[in-house]
Structures are given as C-alpha cells and as structure tokens.
Image (cartoon, rainbow, N blue to C red):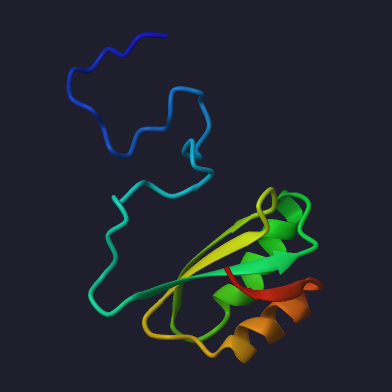
Length: 107
C-alpha cells in the first residue's frame, strides 16, 4: 500500500487499517503534549488480560473527577491516566477494585 498524499494527515489511521497507533493508543498522537496543569500518572494493575479488561478499568477510572483520559494496556498491565490535577491513589484503587481488578501501585 502506497501513500497518495505528500502531506501527512495527523488524524489518518495507521497503514495497518487500525484506529490504534503502533503504541496501542486509540487516540491521535499529540507528541506527549498535555494541557497546562495536567498530570499524567501510570499505574500497575493486576489481572487485566484482554480488551474487555482494559475497557472495564478505563471506564471506572474515567469516572473519577478531574480525569481527562485513560489508556489501559492489558499486555503490560499499565494504566496511564491524565487528569486536571494529582489524583488520590485511594480513589484510583477504589475504581480499579470496582472494575474487578487489583491496583498494584504506581508504575
């Protein structure tokens, strides 16, 4: 498959036809930029084995006030959370527990 445009489109799907990037993100790459004041924290979650697990954990954490994005990756057990400010680890633990998994701590 060859590209037909000389100008890259930042919103285009990767060449493999998936909406996800090669890093496993389903969101466009922003070059790691976050809005001023946002905090990104990575947690280790035990028990995730599939996409359903990722969705359950991400959905529960997304309910925490101030959370702006969540990326859960079952293969690594890592959950990356971006929020408007620092999160209470106990709130994250409660959300992960509600999803049926165990928060092992910060990665």
